[in-house]
Length: 161
Image (cartoon, rainbow, N blue to C red; front, side, top):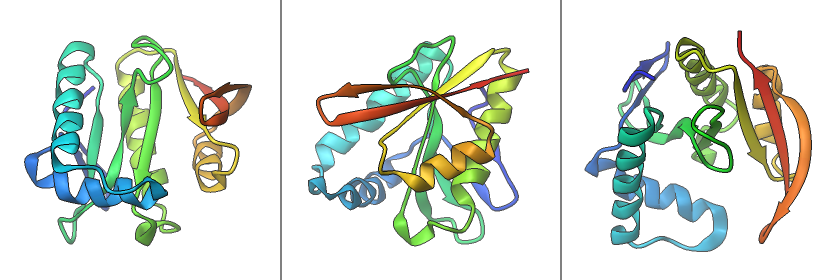
């Protein structure tokens, strides 16, 4: 997967130190509190290390016109595998409803196709209707439901050409 992706409105690039504070604020929007700077730096370091090992990555999503961090999107092993990774994205609420998640995820999907992968996965909590809409636009289909310590997870999949 290329280290950087460009769309009409977005740049998806590797994490940098300048993303730490913005990402902490994004994580806080989940309602679980603000992670520490050190915790967030470890997360970014872990992402870099995982990307070096797997060749896939979660990338920072930057609004090209403004240059601000608005979230992340990419491929991760997550609950899946390197051969059939999970697509993941999370954007600030202030940019929801503007098509950025679909635009970013579509670029990641296209990049995944170029790697020769045959299938992608995604897991979504049942309450997350916006994520289901994004995945529907990308032609993901429901596969099964499982549960973890936080509740139900809906698994969706997309076969790649």
